[in-house]
Length: 346
Image 1 (cartoon, rainbow, N blue to C red):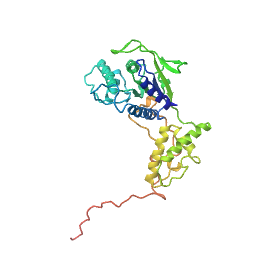
Image 2: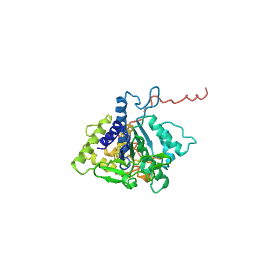
Image 3: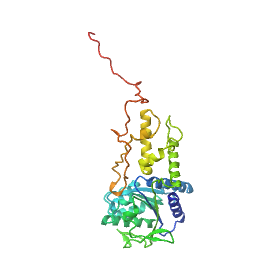
Image 4: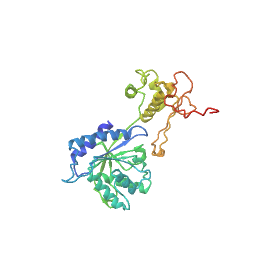
């Protein structure tokens, strides 16, 4: 559903090429639920399709002009967002200089960069870092809405969109089944002339896996089957992640959050190889402690989820008992013991 909505919006707007404000897409969900990965995968597929359709040439450029053709631009919203810092983040994607530029100059530079590079999809990740009780953030969000008048499909990605207040002034249009945002209060955003068309967004929310109905259980099992097929462990048997109580265990350890599940399986596979067991089971995963400390994520914005505790607390993260059958010793073939000591009396 989410992938289809994103794909239809990007390709439909690009083929339409009308002067009206293009509808955008808002993708919500809690942290580590695959929002960014999903959006970037769909955007990459759209970019490949568009480049092939146009023989890898920017169709909007005149003869004799060469420029980087970038149908998709990805930008992460600054933690402390202002109109100026947002413009600087967008221009950084193109490697453009922003030194000693005023805000109106930055906005004109952004508009020129989007047009010169043939950008059709602008992704603004972590948009819920904007706090609309702050004046700078309100100005930044008005600027974001103004970008929709630049013939780009605006894709906003963030945590808890509904609770963030970004849709506070929006209304639900039953006929178009879209969120409708009124234009900015004035017809001008820091010197940038904008149209007075209403801004329309499709809203897509990605949820965690559930384990209640048969369809939900089957979807989780199918995902585990895909992970299992990608693992290359010598002692792995069919059903390593899907048989017995393992699905319920993985659900309990991750609450069905796809990012936590991926992290747990990846760390478990590393431990299985390091220990020589070459197999993932509950005993091994009990030794894995998930730590999600990431300086680039904002815990206050819900970008880092709660991590369920393991069944038992190990003495150290990602360690198994040093002694025990099956523990593989270190390879000493290439060890260098250094020069031999001189013999006494030599």
